[in-house]
Length: 259
Image (cartoon, rainbow, N blue to C red; front, top):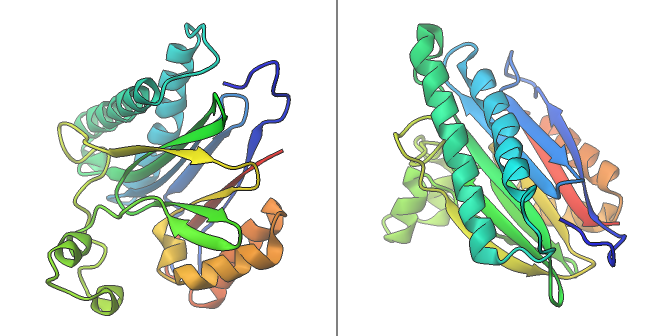
């Protein structure tokens, strides 16, 4: 997805951790720097189901994108075309998860959140297409400030949008992690997909809710600001901080930057 005129490319670094409470890591991630595609999933369901669902997702999505883009002749993939391709890839993963669950009663009800970033050259720089379902997130860190690209697909986010609850109440509400979208749950996935222009100094953060349960956006911003642009150090510090604050869930982070 990069061109001969652009030897530099966006590179992803990822890290996942069991945390301090869970016995099984149901998170998974995929880094395909050659394809310029990065995937993060947080599985759920049963003893093994979540782990299986997230692994299916992080394998199936790059496979679909790779197969489709192998026939692409132009270095510039139009945003609407790339967004449609990501939607197709997420739906393929959705169907694979549902099929696996139907064939093995031990996996019944399994699903996974998903967040995907694909970067392509644009006429004036680069663009990132972001697809997600569930509460795994994509953030942009630009000029010292962290902004959220995704909006959680949760019951509480819906109530927040209707002004039925405050942001302060959401953080401690017992139903705050009830999802309204995920792969494997519904016959058809309807992910949210958006495309954003990029600047060369941007950092992109993908994370599972193991991070955002433990750290506020302000705390994440501070850590990235202190460690930037060292991707490995940012990933390690984010996970170590989540664990120090309780590590209530598996925590996975992927950091993407231009090299």
